[in-house]
Amino acid sequence: MIEAHRPARDMSGHVVMYGHYDVASAPTGGHGWMSPPRVLTEADGRWFALGVADNKGPLAARLVALAGLARTPALTWFIQGEEETGSAAASRVFEGRFPELEADLWLEETGYHDHEDGTLRLIARRIAPEPGCSAPPDVAMGRLLEDLRELAGCWGIGSRLEVRGLNKGAVEGGCPFNRNLPVGARYLALGINDSFSRIHASNESVPLWTFPLHAEELQVAFHWVDQMARGMS
Image: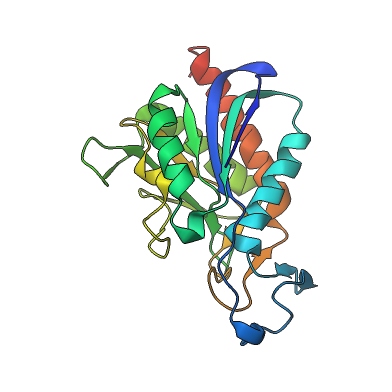
């Protein structure tokens, strides 16, 4: 279980991020794969490998993006290694730590695009008082979503809002990040995956064109956090 901190760099506010480095088990002998599942293979503008979409590719994309950003809010990044096997350590840590954290934005491990046309799926919500329930983004978060829609337009792709969290139905015991978010938290799923990524299936992959876009998405999100923290949004 990793809890990493990066002090604010010429920005205000605080962002909490989540990720995991463990992967689901590969079928014996790599059955159904067009390439060895444990060998990163590039084909047709995509990377193929076991765990490349869940969650090693998104981790790599975010690390590279952050390395290139001179200005960021304060960052807290939780990265665990047991999401596929019950999240015992993360569940204990998050239950104790999350109520102490005052974050302007909670960033999920990844996000999604439609494979067919690249449409950016803005998976966003406020955490409702009722357990397991989502509320629509508030007015302030709506401004962030509009900025992300504008960015998508600059990339020549559409966007749509989905008021929910990422589907973690295949995760044993559920995702501890989602389960422990404080009431009222602003949750956003941004990342490199698309509807062809085939998480927990053969030929798992990520599209390479989304990597530079994700860096720009983080810039937009961090700018909004800075404006919020300064009372300018």
